[in-house]
Length: 309
Image (cartoon, rainbow, N blue to C red):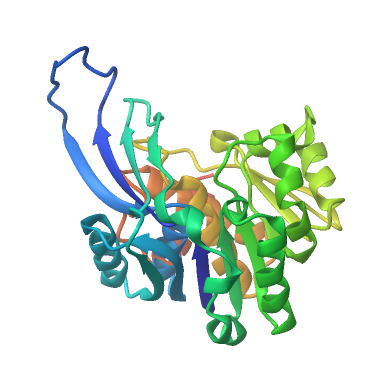
């Protein structure tokens, strides 16, 4: 599996546990502060690399120290960063995430260089040689621009997928709509699906997105697992029961596990199980990069859980 993970790369600073932000100039001792690569392209790239894929990051970051750290963290995982373009006039995208005791978190975010990337920056030769193109955050470049890249990837035999970073909004759906017919897989969360479509049922919302031209929609729903909708119908895959530390990056980890499973010839359902297991292992600690698991460890986790059930 040779995958180009293109689009949103973010450096997260995570702090846990945080029950409230101190007032005024107040301070608070915490247990852990960590920095990690995240985003719908960056976070997915991390887990894909753990699962044995040949991963190439593509996107835009700044020439700042945040960008230097991002490149270093990606390279430590064996990810090719030569197609991360360095911008002089804009900072690297970054977030600060105070993690609540239950694993949920608000976010403080700077879009930064992610907003500057488009088809003129795409590494066309690399895409032509890839088996998979995963586009994280097509809304940052718009549907017409994303469609050009996705169509090119498909023409050269790549499997195409995308995940969305922004909240679900009907206007945003129209903004990215031109890209949807060029997607083999769309990997949103439940709030995005319902917000985009106005549906009150997740499966119905996924079907509405398929009517826009998407091949398969795999919608994550937190502790409720995943709803898969394709031409054959609806499949529901439950989440794994774990003690959650931090939900940051769980959607990206699902995307990575799902796509890796598909690349191994697994059915969509089995690939979704692998995705849910990858997400569960990431949720057991802090940040998108948590866990030193590989593909074999995830498969063993799935097998052990099935045995206990």
